[in-house]
Structures are given as structure tokens and as C-alpha cells.
Image (cartoon, rainbow, N blue to C red; front, side):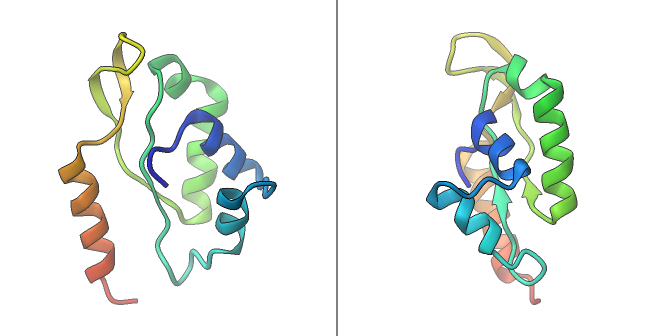
Length: 101
């Protein structure tokens, strides 16, 4: 899921399936197929207790969260929450595609 907003991550962690992304997540066999999440959001949203809890819950489900960057954000502020660089996302995708199950 890229970009994964605070809204989308919190919805997935809550198990909501009222849109295609949520339905796919609940139907996804995480134990046998990787599910990557590339977060991108404002620093305050990234650090909010609800989002922190959602990150932990998604990881407990078996989803793999890519690390966020620290720097200039889309809102103009600086901080954590920046989408990983394209090369980092590509590397993560290639790594899970090459890993035998």
C-alpha cells in the first residue's frame, strides 16, 4: 500500500473493509504472501498515539512497514513521516519477491 496515509493505516488496523483496500487487506493471506505498507503523512499524524498503535497492530498481523523518512513533508513542515524514497520502496518490493515462501 503506497502511499499509506494515517487514515488508511488506522482503517486497516481496525479491520474495516468498506472499501477495496480494506477488503483486499482482510482477504490477503499475510502468512503466505507479503503485504508491504509505505507510510506517508504529517509528522504529528505519524507520532499520534492512534497511528503508533496501528503500526504495532499491523506489524502483529504480519504486514511489513517500510521506514519513513525524516525531512521536508508535503505539508511544508519538516519531520518524520516522509514517504520512503522510490529506490527504497523498489528494493523492499524486490526483496520480498525474491524471498521464497
